[in-house]
Image 1 (cartoon, one colour):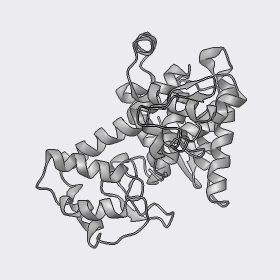
Image 2 (cartoon, helix red, strand yellow):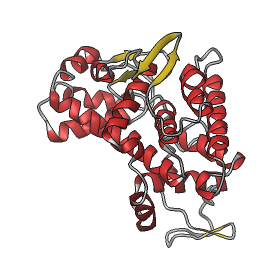
Image 3 (cartoon, helix red, strand yellow):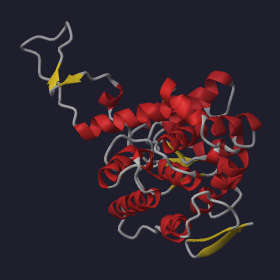
Image 4 (spheres, one colour):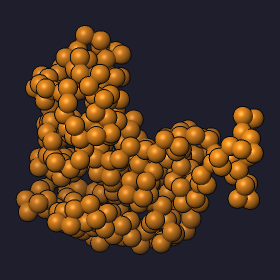
Length: 300
């Protein structure tokens, strides 16, 4: 959602020892040297790997923790809060049929997690959906979606918004959107937050950041923002203060939002998440009151 594509080299394994890079059998003295991977980039890659992959030690840690935001009731609460920011409604299901161009360089933003035509996640969604349901109303747009991926172009997408809205009436497409939201955004955010020693509020803060900034390894993606926060404050899993760490993480998020657009409304942080943090509600326990873009919201 609203993110730049992950750098192509981020998915490639890199072996680093004492600052040297091993050459593959096809390399030669005449081959151009591979670009160095910074410690920051490596840290982001490691964090993404932990967030998205099962590791024995991590699984043992998570198994011994409370469900937190993964509890069905808390997950629904998280979706409601984020929906107040994304759709100005506590009914997060209105997002299924949502589709519009926000003039933010992301092309069409659509669906329950704001999948974008410019950022690969909408393409992935439609490809996965078409694999399971080949005769769907969006399949005919796959060639165009592949062409515009990485750009804000609408070329070849005539009628796409109407087709999306029509498809969103089908339970199968709604279920596919839910699965992709969880696979790409919710599950990795909650998993990594637990490994970082964060409670339910911190898990929600990670999820909301993943939704807004995207699971990107770049400096303004979720993993880049987290990596900066880790440099400024000790993680709770390493004995640091949870309040201090989250306060700094929210500072960094606000800065990123302002860099992208100086007039950005940061109320999802200032009058919601940060307020709960300062209230000491690390469990994100209702009742909750917050303001979003000047509107008041309440969950009993």
